Image (cartoon, rainbow, N blue to C red):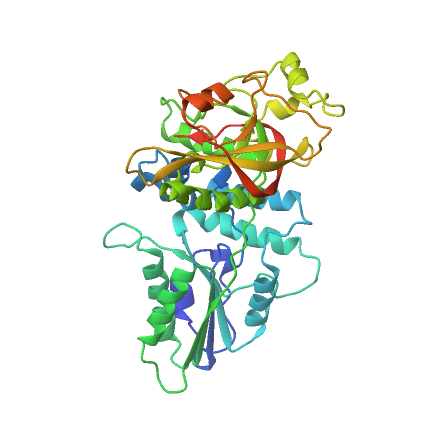
Length: 433
């Protein structure tokens, strides 16, 4: 009873569990993807980075990033695991898939494996720790909880010294199991990525298996949990410093202060923006390309003094602002403890960026939903409240007085039906490298 494929492909010695069942009696192979299938793996929190930086963080050096891609850095997965241990009520594991995996392992005629594109040399120790530690803290007394016959990580190709594409690595592993277990009648694979699912379906269709052989590729709804934003920004900065010890490190876009739209409200106004752009035959709002939209109360890079706050919040009930909300550059990620204000979008204005450009700028004029609330900005005594996009260039300035708007030929059109938007007051800046 050698079960050679298990020995060849397992990456974590402590996680190898050779079945008592002879290889000739193994009739099923169950394959579980790890990231966002078995485990709610964190990806980069998109709202912490500029669009360009977000892309570089995902792609790594191929996109000009100074550090390896997000999915190649163990620090982020390790942080997620530590946060999960600290908050046991929030499960970082996909309970439905964990239950299915327990049933797979309990079947004596089934071999079940974790198969992931994470590399063996970087992640083997972390995977072994995550599985063992989570099992030890399990309270449902299940002997099969997070038990597999092997954990198969991506191995370096001995001939080229490089790592194969994730799909190629997974296909090679499955093919080896099919060769070793000659009486397999069923293969079931669980994965969250539609592209991978489609490729595996093609792979199995082209196998031309023996009569009676069945296969199933199950699309799992992707589940993920983001990291604590303070921890994430610290880890990214650590990775950049490690890669470029004498380099400039992480930069931040100019600090913007104002009322930041919720994600749902932002989606509403983006949909409206496309309708507005039809007036100038444009298809994309240049000034709204970066999250988040917000209602600025001062120019980018400026800080507010206590007297400025008293000027902005003249209404009763808005005079006391927690100073901490003006310190963390990404504080709108968690808005539970901060001042929330609802506004009504009443007008919009569009600007063409060029005579033949498909890009345009879209601005919205708003008023507080509560008619007894008065909010002012530092742009001028009678300056209106305007929704704009996050400013990425510190050289850009806002021209949000009525005189400036007239000079820029900004013409306002009243919306037939006002749109209520939810905002929270604070500051925001994005990481850039």
